[in-house]
Length: 215
View 1 (cartoon, rainbow, N blue to C red):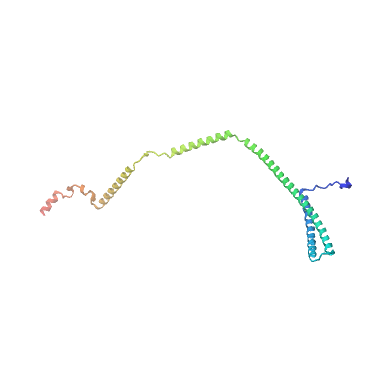
View 2 (spheres, helix red, strand yellow; view 1 turned 135 degrees about the vertical axis):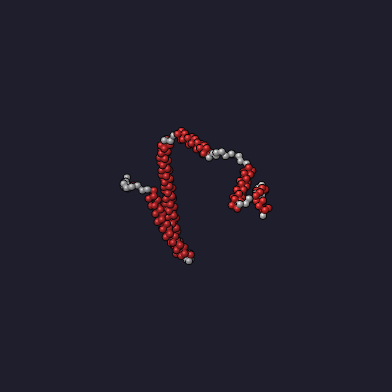
């Protein structure tokens, strides 16, 4: 059996990438051969176009037909190699996708285990009680702020007209006090109080009147 199919290979098995590269190399070598055959066919066609019908042209035509047959054989072989390479590329892509899926599944499993451990330590009832306590504390804080900001002995409803009248009265008192201060400094009675001064203050005493008469 070994004589027919060769000895058993003991080396590492070829990978898909290696097989794809080998197939592409074979296909590229066939492309080189096809380019050479196409050049020969072009030469024969040019020569036959300048020849008259006869044995020489017929012999040249037979050579061109053989080259054309070889070209078709090489083209068929190249197409097969390209199809094989494409099939292996698809298999490689499917393998890579499967590896990515398995990696994603493993990561999700580990994440699921971690989440279960973490969330298993969380007490939902305890969190809700804490939230309720925080809400109660916020309400107490708001009540304290309202209590501290409360005003003392100040009526809530104040009439603006009363305030204007009181402000005008304060202004008049200030004017009167200013007028008295000026009068004390000059010895004169303010003009707005002259009508209220008694007339006997301006009259001289009786002795002064007698002296004036004797004089």
